[in-house]
Image (tube, rainbow, N blue to C red; front, top):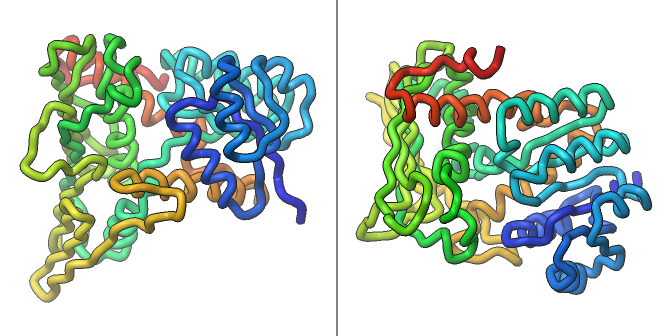
Length: 344
């Protein structure tokens, strides 16, 4: 079976990871790239040996010759690019956050559904191997019936040095980082019905919030806490690790700093090293995220081959995006917000 041919739109900060992932993937290769900045086109094109280079997405689609497109641009461009891909009948991966608004997200899902083309959101945090190890342990029944959980990402890492635009938006940590943690909470504990959120801006030099705490009521009766911070100065910087606490009827699970997965019950105490692989092109401490990029992109290829809907499809990601929107509304209005306010 011949390789699937892909095109990448957006050659910025994070897209280089995606290009490495495509180069390593089984069953696919990138044959064309697009970016409005000719300098970035040259850098990425030369590094990865891609000859077809475009500064216009319309020209890229007009020429065709690829089986899917990976959209790695900023959020304001997502809807027009996804709808352009749908008009050309091209299966699409879209970077997170999915869209500027819930209405945009729903329109993008609808456009791909009408065109009968797959749409996957590059929501890669649930593909980190430590998170998947925790999920497997929960599903095995090792700690019994889960009733409470916590997904935590607290750091003082200067994320703005690599992505300075993040400091300028009125919405920051929920939209950029908590979106991942909220998706992990859904992955581990099921969809949520309601959220109560509080936010704060600690860093005076940014426009948006850099601390957020959310309480989720899940459909199966589980309560979870999702907390994220870029203002937390710890003795050992944990960036970019996501930490977990899960309580069940038979015991507890803890994913702690340093990628230690501890499962405890009255007759069991097991600590496992679940540190992700350091891929040949990856670098510490980014290797957990970089590995997850490769894993989600391989998942996309496998789903295209088999005709299966991706785990983080556009339709599925509406639930995660609704949690983001509900969290902002909850923080602004100081009340619990039900997700049906956004999903109906």
